[in-house]
Amino acid sequence: MFQVLGGRSVQAARLLAPRSAVLVEAVRGRKSRTDPVAKSKEGRIKVPSAVDPVEMVVLKERYSEYELIMRALRMEFKEEVLRKKYEEEMGAQAELRARQEEEEHRSLMDWNNQENLRLLKARVLRIQQEEEEAERKKMEAAIQREQEQQEFIRQKEEEILKLQEEAKNFVTLENLDQRIDEALDNPKNYNFAIDKEGKVVKRTVLQ
Amino acid sequence: MPRYELALILKAMQRPETAAAVRRSVETLMERGAVVRDLESLGERLLPYKMTKHNQRHSRGTYFLVDFYCSPNILDHLLNHLHRDVDVVRSTVMKKEEQEPKSSCCGPSQ
Image 1 (cartoon, one colour):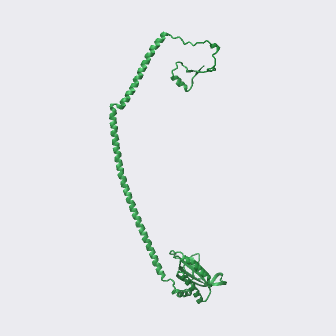
Image 2 (cartoon, helix red, strand yellow):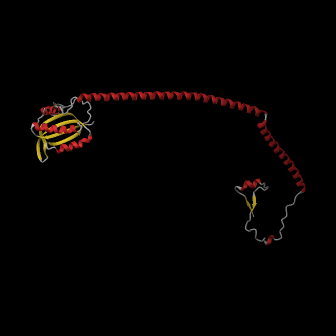
Image 3 (cartoon, rainbow over the protein chains, first blue to last red):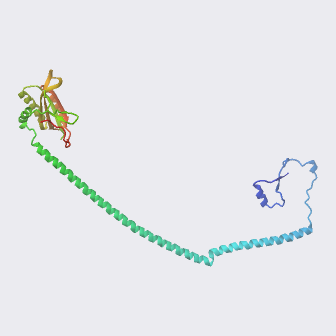
């Protein structure tokens, strides 16, 4: 019928103010709601326990006094907390502090702006220098390219001159007979022998 | 223009005929717009092996070397012409590389 509480519901039951030492709760037990009452319990009338009047009066007085005091204390504390909060927000110190904070904020903002200006100047300078550097490099590259081009042209001209010189010895229709006779008179021999010391022998047997 | 070298092997003939054959070949070249730079002869020699050309067996031949500048388009025609020539035993055209200044090494004899 009654069961001892244990577990999470214990704290909840304690808050709901039980008077007994052990926390008990009513539990169904064997019978459900629809089962008829037992024969032994037939004419049972539940009667509350008797009250002692004197004791009741004394208890009531004491309890009322106690509760009064407790309520007063609670109110006092609550009021203190509220007052503190109000002073915090609206009191004399609050304005001073607000003004100080504002000043601090303004000075910090000023400092920040100064820093920004300084960095801006530095950045502008740096960018300018980099631009100049790039310009200079481009000029140098252009000059280099020019020089290389000149070099190339010069080389080609040299080659042309060389070829022009050699052109004087080329074979033409007029030289042809002459050259053929020359060639037939001077047979060339490109053969040679070489030994391990590097001695070259150009005289060979022409068959 | 690229530079080529024609290694020409002619039949072993008398001097005037050889001269005529060489003249013919070089004229073919020049007709087609080649610029002949130099003409060399390696003399009449024993061929390294017997070659058969135009139904004739050759064991001796005259070697000639012609270097010239020409356009690559005409090479085909040129080789065709030389192959048809009866006096020509073998004709080979090779490309001549641009020579770097050679170190003091072996060169031609004369």
